[in-house]
Image (cartoon, rainbow, N blue to C red; front, side, top):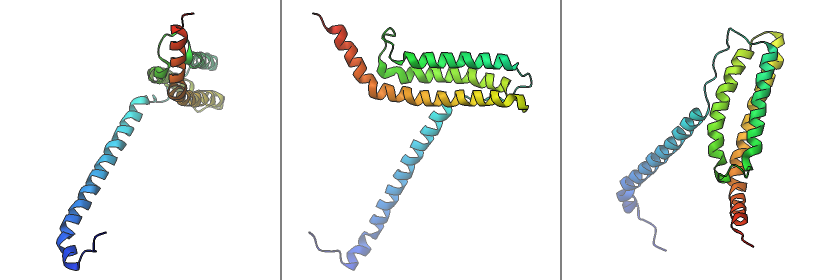
Length: 166
């Protein structure tokens, strides 16, 4: 171990230590800002804008029918994550899900704006569309986890099963 620096050496190296700390802080802040900006941009790109509440409201029965159709499509898409007839890699279902999510949320938000309103009769409809939105968020998490955790193993199993020749 080397001897500690003398007070004269400490004074001589102080500007270099200041420069090193300044560079460290500059690059740490720049890196953190770059990551933060990219995460915000990505999040904004994955979340379509919600249209304002429409003046022309749909009938309650029509709103429920649209919600049922959106739900059926969403649940069917989730059930097909590991569909062997799809032919694609299960590792990539999260990428496919993201594209589906944007399109689905755009339709969902449009329907929710036409089914909202401030009347007491619209409270159950608002709740239905809020719950649909929550289910989409949960299914998105499920799709990403499925692609990352189950996908590689499932793809390998399929490849081995298809390659087996008795």
